[in-house]
Image (cartoon, rainbow, N blue to C red; front, side, top):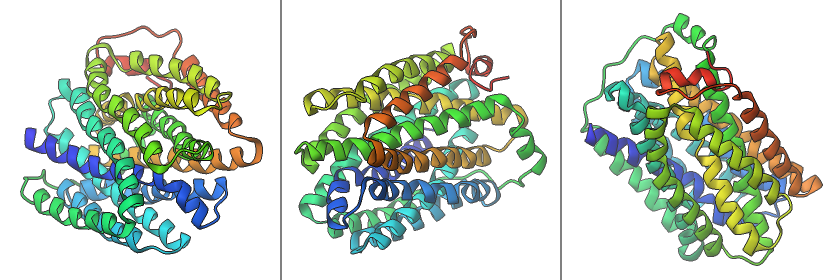
Length: 389
């Protein structure tokens, strides 16, 4: 179990590292390719668009081919796209590289989590998901460091090395036993969309990725316009991701013991307040601390969302590979909408409007949880989440 958890953690660490590595590089790309805020948002959203395209295929691969083979497909896409990103000299090539990185992540995440949950005791599911998500957040923590290193040392060297890392991870993956392939059931797949806890988890996943998508576009450009360089911007994300990485396992254990609603409510309540304040904050010394709080509160939604999806899938007998394939698609929908819409709206009206919308989304989801009591386990608690049974 420990070896498998370590492998799953490293795989999602690398995936989120690649996703977040763009953050400190975004102002330079915006300058070099003369991108508007909408154009910058499109580049950020390319990774999520790839995850959306690969979501269901990745889930089916995890079930039909087995988790290990799904992971190997994801690593192959990751390696090739990293080399493409390293050598790209135009916006279209950068966009394509990010798109294929996202497709690879969909296969990797579906395979890794299907593999992990196949071996996980049900009563420790939230804890193990939280531990893996802690590794994912640590990847997001390290991603801006990689981006800042690429800005200083050269994009070609850094991202070519990441392409080589994919081959090393593939060798590690083949050394661990994988559960046998399964035959997908159309009936169970259809029943999942009638299960309200499963849909509630997907909705929460999309919401969290929309909110973080706003930050990935608006915050680096805001800080860059105030004179901050790639290293300073990367440091802000380093600190916020460090807090998230430490908190994710705690949130997972809390979901196991008290149910998913408690961390969801707390995170959404903080999200409402900090989003409203961010809409009016301008000076970096005020904006940066608020950015940290917003990033942590938005990121705290991912672990309970994944626990809800896993529990809902169990209720209808849906294979976890397909469940996490749909999770990837739900995350990707939000991660496409957040950066692209946030950048377009901010370009037309100013940054304050997307943050007002973020506060409204948090408030709406929070209001939908009213009247529900806390219960001792995720399995009982999910009925309190919007769409819960």
